[in-house]
Image 1 (cartoon, one colour):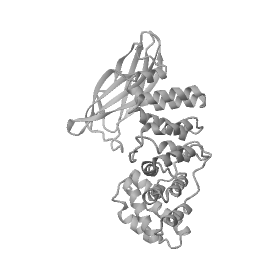
Image 2 (cartoon, rainbow, N blue to C red):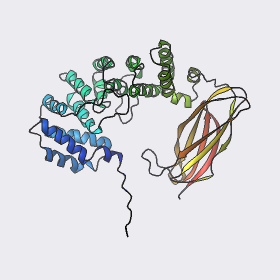
Image 3 (cartoon, rainbow, N blue to C red):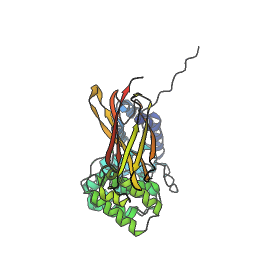
Image 4 (cartoon, one colour):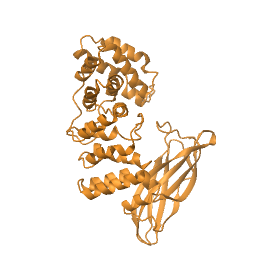
Amino acid sequence: MRIAVAPVQRSLKDQLFNVDKVAMVATRLQRVQASFRREDFIDEVMDRLGDLELKQRIRWISEVLERHLPGDYRPAVGALLRSLPAPCDPTLSDGDFGDFIYAAYSDFVARRGCTDTDLAYSLDALKQITTRFSAEDAIRTFINAYPGHTMDTLIGWTRDEHYHVRRLCSEGTRPRLPWARRLSVPASAAIPILDNLFDDRTRFVTRSVANHLNDIAKSDPDLVVETLRRWRTTGRQEPREMNYIVRHATRTLVKAGHRDTLDLLGVDPDRRVTVTDVMIPPTVHLGAVLDISITVHAVETSEAIVDYVVHFAGPSGRPGGRKVYKLRRLTVSAGNPVTLVKTHPLRAGMSTRTIHPGEHAIEVLVNGTPRARRSFQVVQP
């Protein structure tokens, strides 16, 4: 009798950093640096790699590289740069992220080369590395240490021919970049950089610009609305892409019901829009999906942005936080209610959140204002 065994799902850190990736880097380095001890490097990295989390793995590989490369900084970086593969395809507009393993190269440059003597050389090295994998975290070391020089360099890079370099200028200066060190410069310092990038023809870049503004919105919403209004009046970006930037950059402000943002989007928050017939099952099995049905009414023709909040149960019955999810923007006319349906997954073992059994709730937002709430139980199957 044959017993089927389900394949083991590797964690993200194991997909990105593993013996095959380490061996690939070692092989490329040995080809350009005859003294590089390939097998010793692999053995030393793998001796601890499995015990480390994702960002710890970047730092560990960087530290082991330091012990196996030439002792002087510039010859060591020269070997790293010569070992790089071809840049990500510069003709693409999205979807080519490169290989995460090269984050260790950027970390090496940030640790060893953030000095007066090597500043220009190190920034040029990061520019080359970022076309293989984003140097967005490493560049922040240089922004904090040499803000004027580094920000001026990034402004110059906003017109680079490679879209990964242009994206780095926005992504590396984001105030709340995930997994990254904090910046010492004010959020407004990056506006001149974004002014050069919002008209980019590459979605990989404009998505970063929008995410950047969404970061700023959490501390200075008025600056975001003012900037978007100014960009829109220039006509430099195609209308469809400009609308994408506005929507994506204001998602946090919309969820908060920020009135100037709603006005920017052409939505009147004072229109009477109501929600009825919020239908969800009373009980859902962990690992299944939650079926949501919401009916929206208006007393006069109205634009409405409908989102929903999931209030999660925590361990031992305690509240477990909340998260807002986008649903839909729609036009509702008087006497013609619109029913929206959504399936929301409640997967076990998600990397971003643990779903616990217990009482959860759905709350419906219209233009950022709560309109209805329903509870449901998550139970073990």
